[in-house]
Length: 402
Image (cartoon, rainbow, N blue to C red):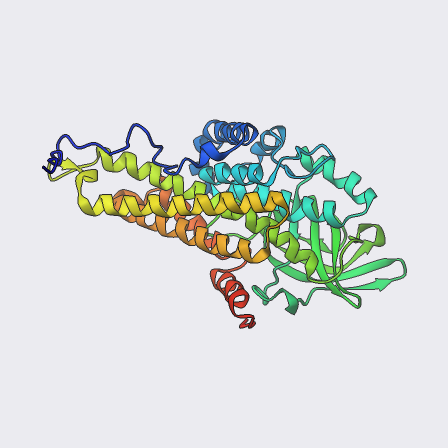
């Protein structure tokens, strides 16, 4: 005889007491003790230091620079680098750092991503011994802030079409050109700048205050408002040979950095999606319409379930990607697949949560619209969704359709 279904008034989630609604497949249980400890430490920082101020920072279009020493004190800057006062954590730890930071705000995760993956990584991977010792320990301590100059005003998704160039003058280089949409640019102490040279694309370390170098902040953004974004301009900037990265020539240099940053994004956007779902679960349980909680409606439950499905898929994708990275077998196309899937997941969830909040959804008092606006940038930078789709398509067919 079939068991009767519980009445709507007494029904409970089938596994409500056993499952975390933000971790339905128990990804946390698959982490090592160190990985869980790192996640918990960053989560506490986000709860105590980021969430109380981030709405104001977003509304006022200001980056909370007072957080930098606190991020550094936890070892979050250059966390995957061995030595040079860096934490030397594994790739999964770095992913979890990004996930918790972006649960707070994409702008905070972007700051750490740029500092770690786009600035410290190329110095560590391609820099001279003197460059590493000069920059990395102070960047790990948050005493120096970096930015990454690749994107140009006309270029976007085609970095090979780079116009910024450098030519030798005696033992030095003269750098000319412009970069655009540069995170941390206006507050950076050093810019890792990629430029065309007669030898191919090279990386240059340009210190703040160098004559001919300016980095005006971009205003009037409606996304990543708690992050500093700037243009970089170079007018006959003299760069000594000692500030040229000696270990790489060609697009391999900047593209390898982007792979590192994209990996962090694959994890980070999960945190943004989790923040939106968490708020929707709370709201729908307490919001009463037509005599019952919003959560008692089938349509609402279907939408919430779909969010949980998407988040779970993204979590498993990110964890496997991290294990591949730690094993040294991760390929760029695998990062493209995860960046494409996870960014689309997070943006769709943020948009749907904004809608399900009704009129409240357009208020910054609720997190989804802030995450939604941020994710419009995150799905675009470090390779647009289309670029990553075509990267996977090229892998499947062997045909370059760019």
